[in-house]
Length: 161
Image (cartoon, rainbow, N blue to C red; front, top):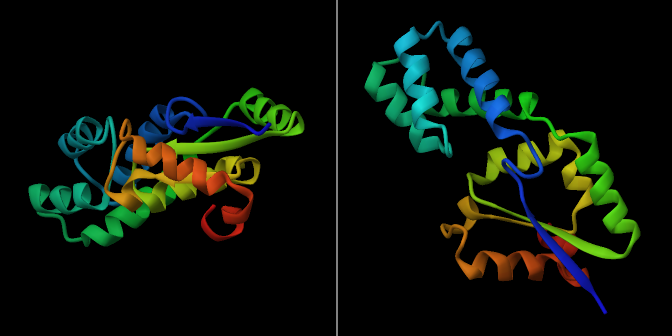
């Protein structure tokens, strides 16, 4: 009998809030953004972030940098800052050793979520991932869970992981 465990990424497996704080600080330093911009970012990005937020940032504060450049820098800073406690990695490794199939279901933009998975080492410990931003559906929509389960199936692991 196959056993499947599905986990959330942000706030469960990885520490998004600390990474967010570090990324916003770094972005503001890189682009010499004013304190009011820092506060705006922390408020707007507290629950989620996507490329559209950085278009609004650019427009709201009349920044010279392109929205795409701001987003890329944010993704790089977030992935550099995100952490995963060793106990989480050890626990997932124990589940795998006990023949569990492991998947991640996460709300967020695909590029940033995949960068976090790679940076933390989680990508190497899971069988499949479903990211809401790739699909334009969000948890708790059952379709996201069904997709994650399908991506964890042995035949789909190499194609969709």
